[in-house]
Image (cartoon, rainbow, N blue to C red; front, side, top):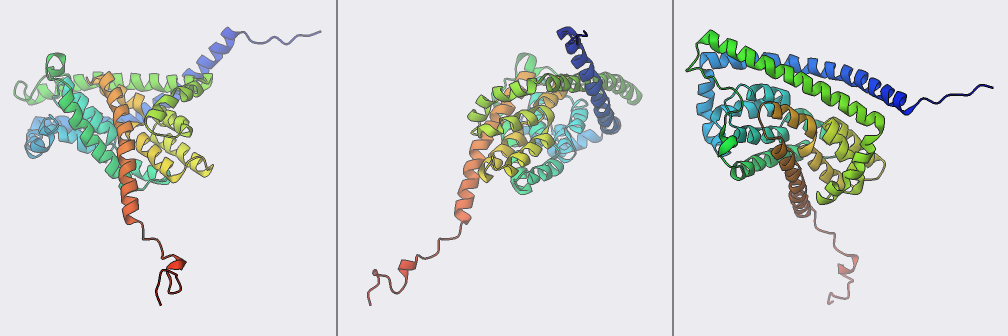
Length: 340
């Protein structure tokens, strides 16, 4: 008589861990390769521009605008590259701009809310919210959030220390500068690859163990505070951990299933538009000196406030644009209110 032996908990755990490392590691390698393709050319271009003194010209043009947020003029390169391209480009540029811990945190939050706008707003259009709405939501929210942080975060102690590059054109020759940047950015890129690999493996492990379902339940207080329906818990969790494309996909699925109204779709899109990919985005900027705690807390607060503000704004605009109700049938010539 044969007996089927069930695998022990240790062997099951080992299999899950092995599968998570293999699948997550493979995804991490692919993601890292995609990042390096984008980031290395940007780093090279930034180094050349700095060696030629071109960054000083850019700083002079954008200084008045960026100073409103307590940032140097050349940090506009970080914002513009992130807004038009993606966050990885913004990180690569930020690593080559002299910023204090406070400034790095402010520009990090600004870019995390306002990055890759052409592509991501198009993605959210498929999830039920127009491109123009999402452009306004993310741009306005990012600017106001950065302004608020620049007023709240102090400028003393560790906040005033430069966290990115320390050498400048004035103290180094052209080739010395290029060599210094190559060494600094080499370490930076190694850290980025390590973080991406760890995140991908961790995400796969959470998926394999079913921990993502637990996280969904834990997200309910957050969705309630943000004024979102409880059905949006899984969407918020997905977008926060895996990114906007996955979050928008769940919004589409919930809407098609009839679980979300158009108003609930809008609120959910506003929140995931400002808080998506929270772990990865925060980790990338933390590598180059931004405050992890301030980034996480501020983005969640910004997202919750944005939901409330833009829901009211949308309601007011829709009410104003609504055509007047047609005259009631009783208001005709035969109405008793008319005197004949």
